[in-house]
Amino acid sequence: MTLEERRDALGHHVSLRGRLDFHTVPDLRMVLHSIVDDGSDDLLLDLAECEIGDATGFGVIVECLRRARRASRTFCIVDADPRTHRLLRRARLAHLVGPAPLTVTAAVG
Image (cartoon, rainbow, N blue to C red; front, side, top):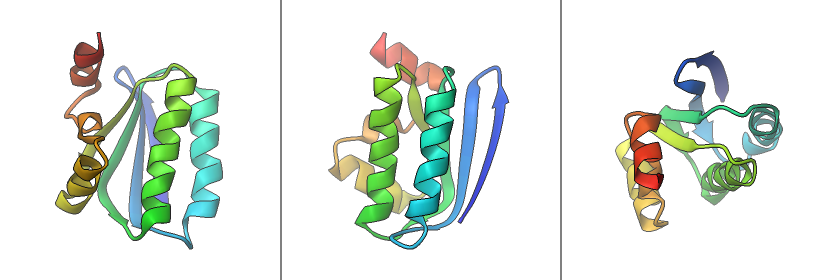
């Protein structure tokens, strides 16, 4: 599992690559918590090259969403594979997936 991050005018971009599962979540969880807690701009999660391997992998994404909400940060998944889209839809979280944070902000505001 690799994580890349960058900031620009749209927000804090975090790209995950690899398999997100029971084995990779513990280290990643600490990094994601730090990213959420240390920022105030929009959090944009790119999962296009990330495979959700099990419930633990999916759970860390939901955990990141909840942590971002508690910190009053906008959270948006800017890209994901079809399987991840289906998982989000079944969990009633499909509204998190959008092409840009402006879409989510407009829907909330």
